[in-house]
Amino acid sequence: MTVAKFGHVSASQWAEAMGERAAEALPLEEIPLPRRATAGSAGYDFVAPAETVVPAGGSALICTGIRAEMEPGWVLMLFPRSSLGFKTGIRLANSVGIIDSDYAFAKNEGHIMVKLRNPSGQEVTIGRGERFCQGVFLPYGTAEEDSDFAERSGGFGSTGK
Figure 1 (cartoon, one colour):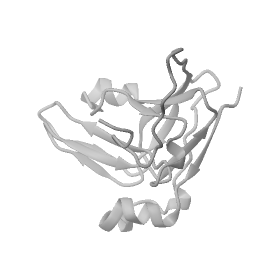
Figure 2 (cartoon, helix red, strand yellow; figure 1 turned 60 degrees about the horizontal axis):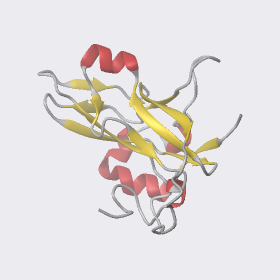
Figure 3 (tube, one colour; figure 1 turned 135 degrees about the vertical axis):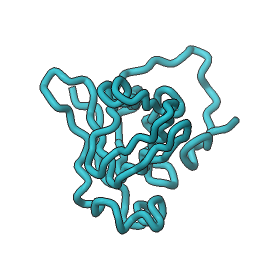
């Protein structure tokens, strides 16, 4: 069952998000869209468009250049690739990234950005083009009491505190 479509953000969104790092990153059109490695894989692998160093005890943000349009009632959940987490201890700063079905229409075009945290005592380098996280599409339900909804305007924390 197909529930979503990946695409790239616009060149202007990419340039705004990357800033000075744009020159060292893969060109937007060369960033591979997330894909599953095998027919039995649940997760769609995301690649790092630029080399990113996650300092020991610190964090780093990876702008993926990717957006996902999905059917209502579905969510894209992001996790570190199991090999990366197992070998280095790297994890997502918010444990699991939640990409809502209406995020694709936010002011930032639904640009998926992943913040990694490194709890270890050694810096970890994510290479340009390296698969570093995976996204899994899952259905979600709603409560009977749902009725008052805010309009999405942006990304992290944009729907209220």
